[in-house]
Image 1: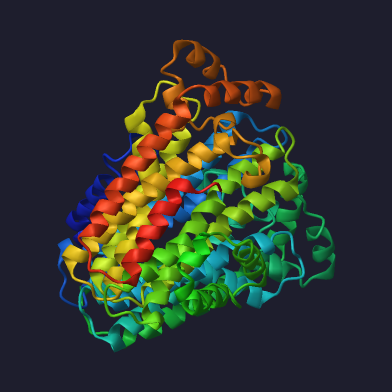
Image 2: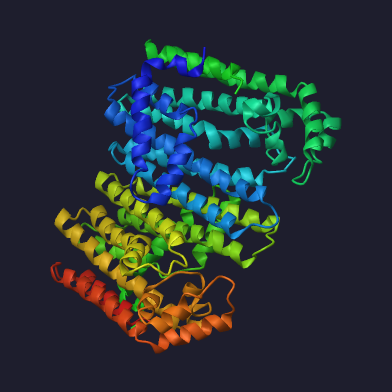
Length: 320
Length: 320
C-alpha cells in the first residue's frame, strides 16, 4: 500500500493544510512569495503534518486549530532544508562563485529565516505555553544538530553514539514534536502526549536510518540524485560506520574526500553494499520500529492508532 | 553625558543580563559556545536590553522575569547580525573562497539559527500569549526587511518610502518590540505598552537614520571601518536619496558599483557631504525624535521616563 493511501481519510484536511501553506507565504513580499511557493510546490511527503493530524485524533480534533501546528511544523522542516541547501548550492559551483550565485545563497538564507518566522507566527495561535516550550526545545536541538553535522563531516573516527545523537537532533526530534504538538493542540493529557512524543521519536530514528540506507541501495531514478551522495559529502551514516568495522573497508572509506571522482565513489559504495553493513543497519532501523509499535500498544484503539501502525511498518519497507 | 551614564542606576541589572547572556550559550556544543561567546564579548551598546528594562519599570519590575525578555531580544539582534555577516564575509574573499571560508559561512549561518533558537527558548518563560504574538510579528517583519535590503541594493530608483519601510523592518520594529515586551513582561496594561511600542518605533527610526548619517560623517576611527561603506555595498540610505535629488550628484552616485576603488567612492562621499543631504537627513531624524519625546509626555513620571528622554536626546547627537 502506498503511504498516501494509508491516510486517505485525512485527505480533505491535508488539502486544507496545503492551502494554508500557500496562504502563509502569500502577499508580503513578491520575491519571498515566489521562492516559498516554488519550494512548497516541489512537494514532499508532508509526513510531519500527517503526524500532527493523526496525533490530534487522540483529543478534541479541530482542524482549524490543529492546522496551525501542522503548517508550522512543515514550514520549520522546510526552513531547515533551505538552510541545508545554502552551502550545498555553493559546492556545485565550486571555485568561482558568481555574484548571482552569492545572491542566491544570501537569498536562500534569508528565505529560510522568513519561512521559519512565519512558522512561529502561526504557532502563536496556540496559546498553551507547553506547546511553545516543546517547540523551542526542539528548535534548539535541531540547530545544534546542524552544527554537529558540519563538525562530523569527513570525521571518520566518530562512533555509533555520535551518529544516533546527530539523527536524533536533525530528524527524530522534529517528528517527535509533530506527534506531541498535534496532541497538545487537541488538549490531550500529558501522559498521552508524552507517549506520542516517544512514538514519533522512535519512528523518526527509523525514518532517518532508512533514508541513510536508501542513499546506498536506491537507484538514481528513485533517489533523484546519484547514490552515495551522503558519503561523498562526508556524511558518515550508519552503513558507513558498520562497514568501517572491517579494516580493509575502513582503509578505503577514509580516503573519501570532496574532490573524488564519481567512479571512485561508486567502487566504495559497491564494497559497502557487498558487506553486511546494509543488513545490520536495517536491523537497527527495525529495532526502533519495534519500539515505536510497542509504544502504540498503550494508546486507545482508534483509526489514528491503526494508521500510525501502518506508517511505522511502511517506513521499514519503503523504497524511496 | 555618555550613554552608559544615563542608565547607571540599572548597572546591577545589566550585569545580571550580561551573565545571563553568557549562561545561555554555555555548555551545549563547545563549537557553538566558543563562537557565541566571541560574539557576546565583542560587546555592543546593549540598547535593546536597556529599553526592555526601562519599559519594565512602568509595571511590576522583577529582574528575574524581565531578564528573559532582555536577553532574548539581544540574542535575536545578535542572530540577525550573524546572518548579515555571512555574505559580507564571503565578499572579503571574493573570487576564490577556500573550503575554510565556506565552512565559516555555513557555520555562521547555523550559529545564527542556534542563537535565535536560544532566544525563543528563553521567551517561553513568559507565558503571556500577547508577548509571543508581538515577538513573532516582529521577527516576520525583520526577515522581510533582510530580503528587501538585498533586493534594494544598487537600486537607485528607490524612494523615501522604500527606505523608511526598510529601516522600520530592519531596526525600528525590534527596538519598538523591546520597549513593548519589557512592559508586557511587567504586566503593564495595553494602552501603556502600546505607547512604549510607539516610543521605541520612533526612537528606532531616528537611531537608524543617525547610523546612516554617521556612515558619511564619521571618521574611520569612530566607525571602526572606512566611511561610505553603506553606499559602497549598494545600501541606498537617506543621505544618498536626498543627494540624488540633485541631477549632477545623481549621475555620479548611480555609477557606484561593487568593483569601484576606495578613491572613487571617497570622491562621491565628499560630494554628498558638501550637499545639503546630511542636513536634511538630520532634520528627518529629529522629526522622529520629536515624535518619540511627544509620546513620552503621556507616560507616568518616573526615573525610567526621564532616562528614556535622555536616551532619545542622546541618539540625535551621538557621534558613534
